[in-house]
Image 1 (cartoon, one colour):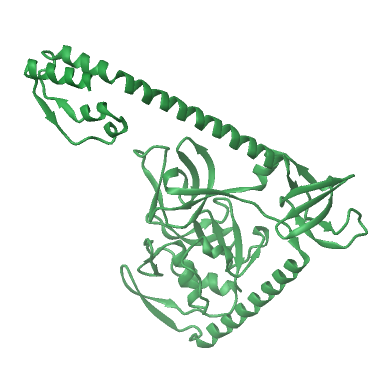
Image 2 (tube, rainbow, N blue to C red):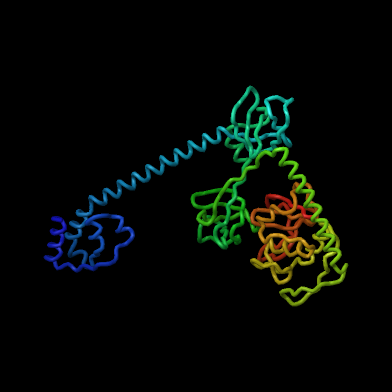
Length: 399
């Protein structure tokens, strides 16, 4: 209080003009008397009152030093926390293994090849090592727990884990701009809707390099949530359930195709308004993937429209696939990410006409010959693209 009285006396003696303004967020961080003083700002004539300014500066030095000390302490705590997290990560990696096989390896109930098979680990499946018994590991992967020969897994290898995992960025913004360079001033490569998951290629500072239909670009990590996905082993019960589900999906697809054939006009034309007026298109015929591909190809050249589902007036990538399949009596979600779970999966080497090909933030319909038909972007509209223009995440078969 004595210092405050001294400061007030100097101000009155010099006739200083003081202007009081609301305390800023930064000023409020300094507590006590200095916090009160920081509400007042000297209004011009700074040279005349330079001496007074130096007194005020000296008056605040102690609190400033305390703030600086606090910042140093915070930084130190952050670094220590990072070291602790890294130790935890390293510890976790030491207990993880990755299957390294051509197809799959059996996981058994006991550490012997004569023991009952409990399930399978497929190539690049990840498991946690529980114990080691001779040249066998007891592992846990998903719901599968049992023994596996040590020859078929790589343990505690960071490179193997990175190779086995896939990094995805889930979009948090309503419409995320993907930029050509890692700066907000860079041009826009494309736009990705909320909740879509796009493939992460690289991470640099506050930016994430991702892959979308238009190519590879950058997004701010403020607008995405990044996670790593691994694949895990399969119990025998889960394998049987998966096979049953695939058979059921095939039967359902067959019934939907037959309904579509029964309700179609068998070659008569149907009319849908296009952006340039009305135009006639052949109605869907047939009950297989080739029929889907043939029907979809009619709309090449029509416009792309964000969020659209019209094959003539405009649609986006998932809207295009949704609209084509709806003509065959099949209901699909309006999301390229959600389409990764429809129908049943086939390998990219076994793609057939009509298959839904899913990419990072994009989806299209395979037409054969290594090509897809897809609603690409505003510039290209609905067009034909090389099926391997980017890494294929999954291929889903409906028919």
